[in-house]
Length: 438
Length: 79
Image 1 (cartoon, each protein chain N blue to C red):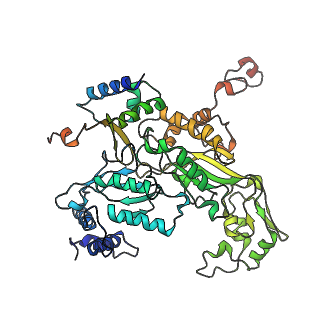
Image 2: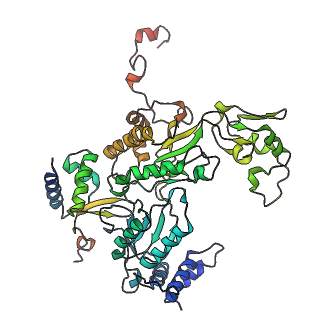
Image 3: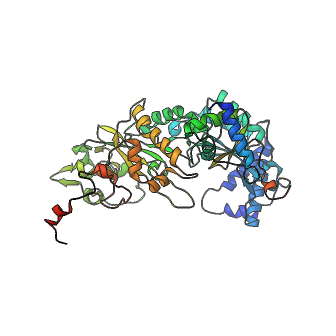
């Protein structure tokens, strides 16, 4: 029997998608029955109270959560987000209901035992409610009391060998795609660099000294499965420098219908026979491909690695052999004042352990600049807009490159300095007048 | 500058502003110390460990304050 009537929330469950309300009710019921005799360390009915407070928020049209605070684990300035209910008498089970972010394993590989252990810990010391995974990529533990924070942290560290993640003005938990573990498109070992930088930059992850959040994300190929280009301050996107590898026999097999295009995706209806001209060649954004006399050709200098042809015919086309990554800077995806895509900083760099070049020529100079010049709550992308992309080139030492602009004159924040231009900005007016009238 | 001197500077500056402000951005503290961010971070972290300062976080932004200072209810005249 539910503790509170929840007519508004019940309505949410009637939609066509799975509802978080059903999940909350399921967990509330499970905690009430406690069939596994768990020694709950926070109120057993916290999920009932959570349903109650959310219902009340719908009724009042205003939130009953107070957000933020001084809670955390000792020595860490991130990973815990304080949450309090402003109706603690009515809903004592969620009077303090803090969120914990737990650093997810690279590529989100889990063993069943590890998942069970995580759930067991959180059933016992938290609400049992999780978000796998949050937008940052972390394992999100939703709802526990202040007293349980250190306990959860201790058990995570000592029993599960797991750290908590980033929040606040910190390096956020780095996140990567599944990478070379499962994906033939991956041009570098996303999991290894994600793990390496997570360990290397522990201080930046846990002790806030940045103007605002900073995110690394690692995509093994331009398909960008973790959307690094759209939402990370420093985005790593796998690419290659040589030609796309073409298996002409397999191309013919696609055309002949032996292999399903898109590896069988979109097979829910009959789209007719595969048409390489219509479905691949004509859709190439730079028109760098042609299929003539039974042979597929790609003009590599024109190819922008959009991945479309490779995605459609993965058995015939493969990424090149000379692999590395492009590094882009300054993306953000805020809720309020508009998203910004990343800008290319390093067209190509080899991604090889121990990643010293990346750390010393890209990450650390950028951080030093942003920490000194960034205003409070200013993301890297905003600083780049304010001070100019030239400044990024200056602090990192990379040279301006045509690939950094989308098209001539579309990046008005790339400027030259006088000493970089042959002859400087001054001219001999008499010499000029020999060729041009007033 | 040694740690004791840094702590003294920060505590004095924060106490001076205590009536109007109880939470400070990291950059504000670095300015008080007149140090580059990386050098300031070492001093400020030590102050957190010594429980002179404490972190405050909204979830997206972090700030620092003197331990125990600044309750919102007091700021709005409810105490």
